[in-house]
Amino acid sequence: MIFHQYILKRKNNMSDWFRRDSKNIKTFNKRDTEEGMWYSCPKCRSVIYKSVLQQNHYVCHECSFHFRITSNDYIKIIIDDVKYEEFGKNITSGDPLSFKTPKNYKIQVQETVKKTNKKSAVTTVTGFINEIKVVLAVMDFSFIGGSMGSVVGEKISKAIVKAEQEKLPLVIITSSGGARMQEGAYSLMQLAKTSSKLARFSKNGGLYIVLIADPTTGGISASIAMLGDVILAEPNALICFAGPRVIKQTIGQDLPEGFQKSEFLLKKGFIDEIVHRKDLKKKLTVLIRLLLKKNE
Image (cartoon, rainbow, N blue to C red; front, side, top):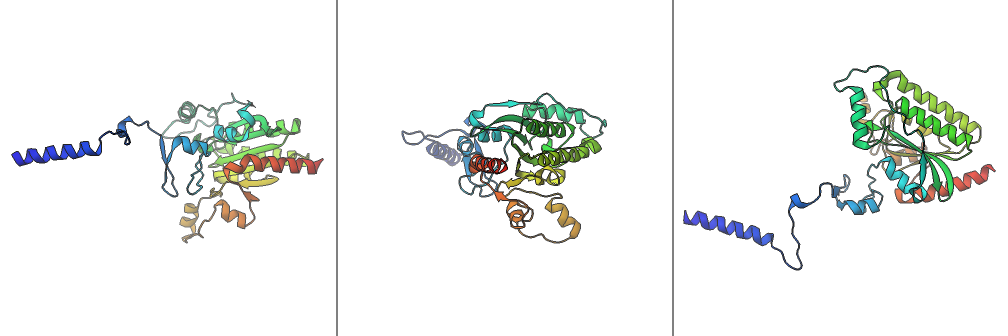
């Protein structure tokens, strides 16, 4: 009994020793730390402080892995002084097919709106990139996988029309799982709708630059993502119609290393350039000035 008490006392003393405070050592309880203060890089497993990651545009300082970010984050990176005018903000999704799923589609949309503080999977704005006025549309994967339903298609269409009417360059950033299955054919129609408007925009001399972010798949990769005058992509972005797991299950074979990643597509000529997030604003500025001057 005495020996047992000695062991317990010894154990507590050792615990206190490891947790002791001194002038040079600060200790804290895990419970005292704010949740979400630290991020773990999926690629190199580095642990990164949230504020450091934010300062680096959500790019790992060790391996340059690009974390997925929201439409607001892209706007902060690209638009001068984060001053912009948003349009189409109050267009919201309906449930045209009364789609039956374990979770009601209307409820799913309502919950996503509350969670993301957005009303749709794309944000459309006008603003300036190094004093060049542009129309910018940014898809947001955090809103039902960035899927294109009737609202996303309508907002992107409005962005294209606005760029055409005001003779402004159009920049679209894609991050999407493709068409929104809950809206069926209404969703698929948006792919043709936006593509036809881009064709008219191009025919009338409009400049369209697209940045493909991770992931861009399904109908988006087969439409607006591949119709830019210049097609840029972020490093290691997944760009495909059907994902690698689906293809592997279908053909029963292993796929080439890096298959469907932006670096693979660059080698095959599907995209024009891979751009690090820290260089994005500068790259867009150079391209827009060069191509606008060429079209004069």
